[in-house]
Length: 116
Length: 111
Image: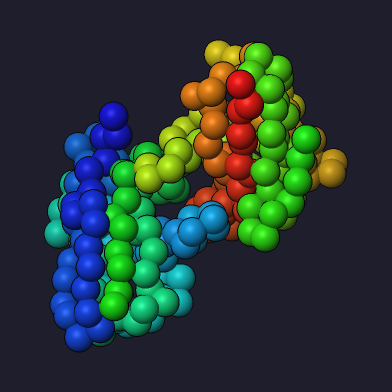
């Protein structure tokens, strides 16, 4: 069983909707990530938070808005998405040691998003 | 045998045989590598890792080999079982201390 919990598991939304994906971990990890994964493709990094501060944004369109309310929670707010944004969205966490994201990534089971 | 489909290479092996999954990585400065297993409908699951100061590491039924000269990583699975059927990704940690994933290989275990 994964120690990173993502909700919802499935989400269907229209292009004008506003929705959010949620991620929670209680391993004390201070780095949290959002990845996007299309079918038959590897995960692609979207955002990295380190100590609740956004440290990396991989040129993600502004219709995706991340938020890290505290060290255990990570949200991804969705607005005005396009059908091509349909994908599996994976949350992950890792330890931070000496200021660097270190150790393995622990992944959640993902939220499968369909944009109509 | 191994075949390359439209998007994802596939390796088919008989149950009980050994499997070897290969990965070419891109960044010679990468210092840490992980193999992940992803079953259908699930998130990637850690299998084994190796740091760049090593060339081999063994786990339970799995071995990772690292060849830095040619930037090549391999995952060996001994006595492959039906439960090993999944997509396997290598991941390298390089610039910015973040992981980049390889394209993945689908392992299919034949009865």
